[in-house]
Length: 532
Image (cartoon, rainbow, N blue to C red; front, side, top):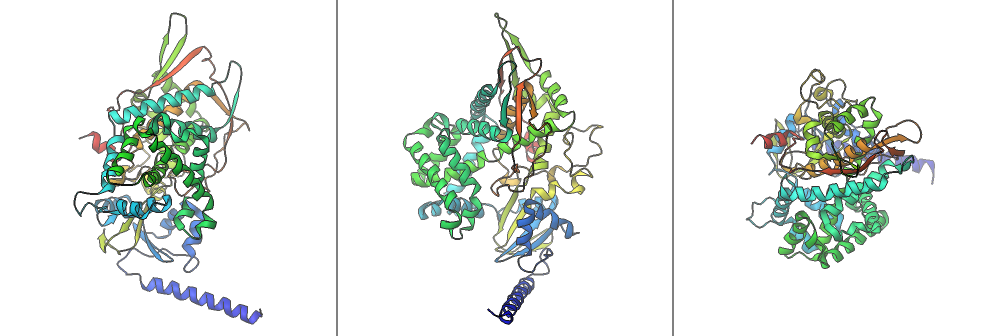
């Protein structure tokens, strides 16, 4: 190939890219949100997202000054990015036109490989405007009803807590001995076991380690499954892993495992079955459901436990809170039992709760997404049909206008009730979105919170932990899967675990949970609910 031909080809390609970039700009209506600049025409945003990952939207928000929303022109897709809480609230009020369900339904069908019949059932009457029959809305209602505070959630909580206690009992080192763990690997195992047994019951498919490992292989390859580009090459591993988990759930349903499971899990089978969905498609949908219940709690627990230990003085302060509400009993043989109650922790340990909420602000990278179903105007900006709208929590969580000059720091006192400690820390409750918001507010937030608090408080109360390398370090999180809301650490921390000094004579640890009617407001919507 001659140099003349090569330079000519490169010049032609560059001209084409510039022409396409100009074409995209010409289609931009001046009434739309302003266009975000990109360093490379046509593909600049793709390059930026690949390099900066979940921080890219926040980078652009600082460049598009003066607008609460901006436009990203991507190859084949227009994307709007909301960057202010006021505009996010306005978007949530237009949930019929700026809709989540169409995108979510496509996501479920695509990543789970559902049949055409299953696809049709899921996508039928997503908005509820075509009569009362809507599998999507019925399933959504079931999930919210079984995961809200009440008897159904209590049953799951009690089972989950029993598993957490059992897992920590197994870790307990003998007198004068140490146990060595990879902190994230260990917590991932604890949370996976506790969550799935409380949801799926005694025939839990994930009790088989091969199935649990296959699920995590599937989860790591969700982006490749969504893209669908040469899937036999780019998504071979997650596809094979998914099929393995699907087969396990088919066997589970055929054996009646769901009949011994939580109300939540029973309904996840019985409801679509009543609409005529096949067992295979129900199993595929449940693989997607497993993503929702499994992937975020382990990293949230990891960061909470790590930051409690690494932030100067915080471990001692939180231990004082937990110790103060720990019940101690001694039987006739002199055996000592210490008991923690999760509901009591929520009402009596403000620093523990503030630390947990700050971890979610500090480590959340989730994005709420909507499809624009028809041209509409929001806060004076035209949003065009066919575009997608994103509301990245990372943008709101890292904006100093929302959180003050310490926004980039981990501040465990940021969420304490109004006091001299935090009066100089501005905070807008509507800017706090670790669980999304509006009609798509995460229904599992209360269960997840109970699980994190159970694991963290028990570990803090009964163990002394120290890093093998001698110093706590904060892992990077650049390789976090796109299917997660909470950042995943890029590397694990090797930790030595010993019985807490002064607690060697404790024979038994219990964790309980009073009725979940004792409501803890995690987000603004919870506060509004609790006041009704």
